[in-house]
Image 1: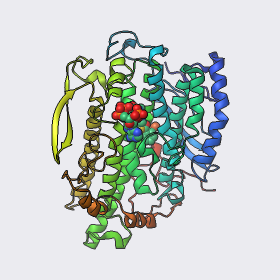
Image 2 (image 1 turned 180 degrees about the vertical axis):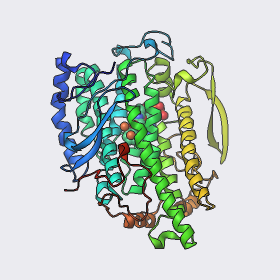
Image 3 (image 1 turned 90 degrees about the vertical axis):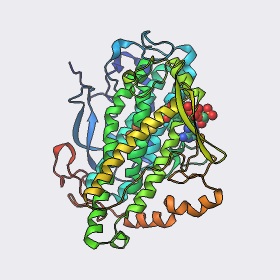
Length: 473
Ligand code: BYC
Ligand code: FE
Ligand code: FE
């Protein structure tokens, strides 16, 4: 039976918040601080406009969301945990087979808090990164998708704050405040992970971010969804339901850019489409190079004792742990990792436990490649001979084995001098950024689109394409 959250409550939830006065009070006193953050650091302007948003109402597969026009500050950020699965047994690590934990074991307080804070930190960071984009939205449906992602990332912050407040006492309440205090890109109090301090200055970056960086979310949340700490696992399982839409926005956004570009290349019989106000494929490739490499860093070092401990202790598993055919303990398994020695790539087998981060990164890369293949099919079907390639794993890395190396997108190890010469051919340079920025003008008439992007194939929730997804007055 589906239990629907009670929306007369300030914090809709399926955790029976009313029976826990202490937690309810803690969350209610954080609420105004959150709203204050949202109004100051969430979407710039448009806070009083009505937006056609989906709101989570239950965790039932076929009816978890309802749609309607709301003003964003009145969005109901709720707290939802998926139903118990796996008969409540731990699926991996040294406690495999034992019952999952409903409370945090004392010895794992530190690492669990750290994982939850790191996850929680990315959510408001992305909202901050995207806060100016509405002013240049290429259509109302795109603006609505931006806002949908923003409110859901903010709900993900709520999800982590709930865990901190319910299970980490005073420390947790303090962390919840600090999560509102760090700021993306602020040199004095930056967000924790690299990619979340980069800028998202234009819509091409936004679509790339939601394709590549939200996909890190899919893989990290997938790993945390296996956790022996049951409230964390079930919270992340529900977050994954929302995540699918974020990646969909990224993938279809880039597909629409490609469609428009290929159409123009054909009709004007040239690759040089910039003079028609269209995004050329080689600029698109540079954006892929940047966002893919920055997102690869989010998986941490190839070999990590943190990751090995998280796994052995049962705090963080592998993506879809139950589908992997091994003993789920990895005490004697190996995994291949690559490094550069004297200018050459060298692959060696290391303990699979130490290589947990690398394995997740490899799963992620394969998933990215599937999306890129779909983009390449669109290009091929348009009769254009061009292929988008994911750059080599070692290209433009700041974390791990390759952070001190200079490697080209195709995987040649280079001298720093040669890299400096070629950098502007491989990563978006000032001129590219300026060009993309010059295309960014807001289109706010229902059913109309900026010239550099094709219309989407479908509306939201079966509405027409010219539906007023954002009411502009
Ligand atoms: N930037 O042992 P290592 C999402 C640090 S995205 C800066 O290899 P570990 C979303 C590391 O903290 C999903 N620092 O790392 C997407 C460590 O520091 P200490 C986010 C970095 O711990 C779009 C040191 O380097 N969720 O949801 O194995 C929109 C040694 O590293 C970075 C998570 O990340 C970096 N990129 O793994 C909205 C899940 N990488 O100990 C939302 C939770 C590493 O020297 N986090 N460092 O001080 C984790 O599981 C782990 O913290 C990491 C790092 C996988 C990130
Ligand atoms: Fe998220
Ligand atoms: Fe997301």
